[in-house]
Image (tube, rainbow, N blue to C red; front, side):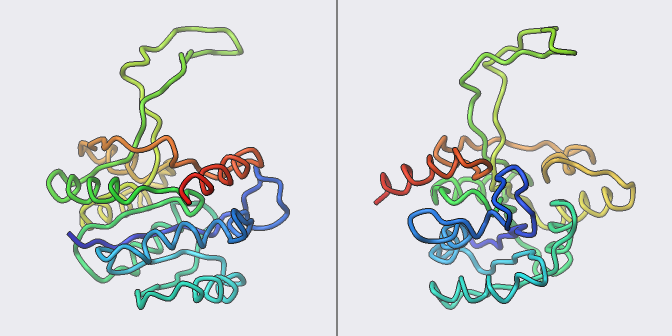
Length: 226
């Protein structure tokens, strides 16, 4: 089943401490964003890629992605100050009515088999997210004092992509904008309008490049994939 992917790529990456958009930092000699978008450029089921960017970075990103031209439609939109604003801009630009994915630009090690499962589940159920089971014991604390030890069996670490029927995602996004609600991911917006979100088990390799340590992990993952 075909889909469109929306990629918010207008962040600053302050936690990386790179002094520039972290998506331009390289893994294996190529920018993080290049690796991420290439996953979808090479997927025959991806019909369109919509990327939210800073206007001043659009030209350099276009040139970056031209290295891997697969004849895929890539649409650029102006990103917002928050991730949610960037995704909303992508939603408004999309002209179809199928399955849409939202994927973090800083997650370059996505497995295509997870994409297929997400698209299939979202088509059947409406909304699906990639996630992995928590490995560590997790404590709920207040003022550095443990209040409760949570049951690890019921805890999942949420990743992207997150997949939705377009009309459901748009309805959730519009409601959040109208009510001034800012969520941490798209599934949270869907949950708050009363819809269930299904979990598709992802991969621990699907690491988000957030800190300098993550870049080192990325080099190892890339070498292993080679």
